[in-house]
Image (cartoon, rainbow, N blue to C red):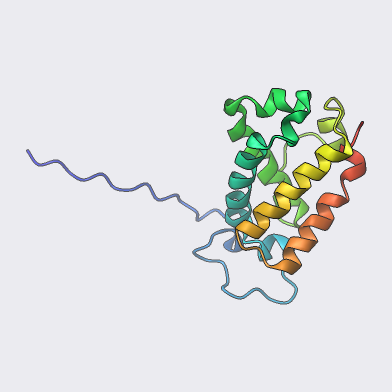
Amino acid sequence: MTATPEVAHVPDTRRLAPEADPATAPAVQPGNATLYERLGGCYGIAGAVDILVDRLFQNVKVNANEKVHEHHGNPANAPGYKWLVTSWSIEAAGGPKCYIGHDMDTAHEHLSIDTAGFDAVAKEIEATLDFVGVPEPELREFMDIIESYRDKVVQA
């Protein structure tokens, strides 16, 4: 009896918006493309967030806050956190509405995040975007979005 080789699973992306699927996304973005589109749609954003969350869970400065470490210290929380950060980032960058989490005030009110903690996360975001090759204009635009949430996140 001859074994049949397994066929690699190929995700069915037919229901994605054309710009969200790398196979159908335009190679060159029009001048009026959203930040979401310029970041590579859901695939580009999810790829960056996958790296970012792993970095955040290991960052000593971010985890110096005991309340943050309660979450980041448990590797089982990473997949759900990656989903929330990805979906939040998609919306924040002008993509489709998909974020199901709390608003930033509610999500952070119990964490006692101080300026140093916010800055540590912002540095990781910037370093990750640079690492994955996000061009400087898009990196700056996304970091401006992050900075605009400082007052909602910093609670201490």
